[in-house]
Amino acid sequence: MVEAFHQKCQDTGIQQGAIVFTSRFAKTAPAKAAQFGIRCLDVLAAKSFTWMLAPSFAFLTRRIDAQSWLFFPEQEGVVEKHNMELLLEGGREVPKAALNKTAHAALDKWVGKRPELTESRTISLKIGAPGMTLRNKETGATTPIRYAGLTLTNSLVREDVPLQFSQYMEGDNQITDIAIADGPTGRIAMVRDSEGGSVMFQPRPTATAEK
Image 1 (cartoon, one colour):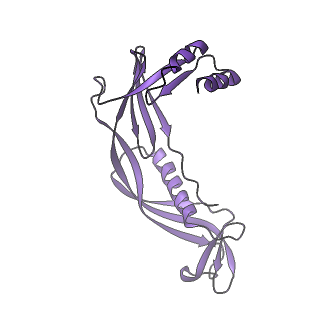
Image 2 (spheres, rainbow, N blue to C red):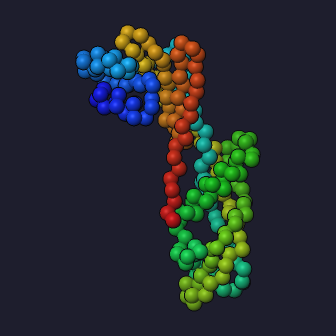
Image 3 (cartoon, one colour):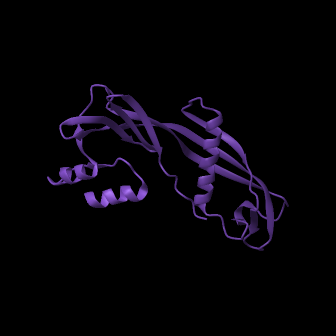
């Protein structure tokens, strides 16, 4: 493993490499790594750190509790609510997942302009629908959509995620402490070493709606 990692470092132009072990590495690994100038680090679980008194990290997210769509056609009388189908530009029916994704994107945009925290709120938004049409399931007649009205009820949700504490060791020398929380929107890591500390956030990839 050490030789393969060294070759990968050379192939990618990395000057200083480090191998991190979550379990005890083989006794021969440190000697082999030293020959190539590679550091071997152990990751040890810890119960707490003196610099981190909180046992958890609070994530605040917005949840959609209810959504209602109203589509405004260019031509009245072609469709009614009980017999209409919502179609994409190519004539395929719009999947429910696509509407949910649009609703979440619209809410994120709306919240981004209004950072004040409120526990629950109902908002009404105007959504563009370029290329989309409504079709009468009984007659097959279609009409383009001028725009859509979206009514959203959303609430503020707090989730306290327990922190996972780890120490990175090089032999008997402690290199750094890390406290990590994997929340609903991503991973936050609080790092402390001899030179100070830093906070890093890695957003969770958003699910891709059906196309």
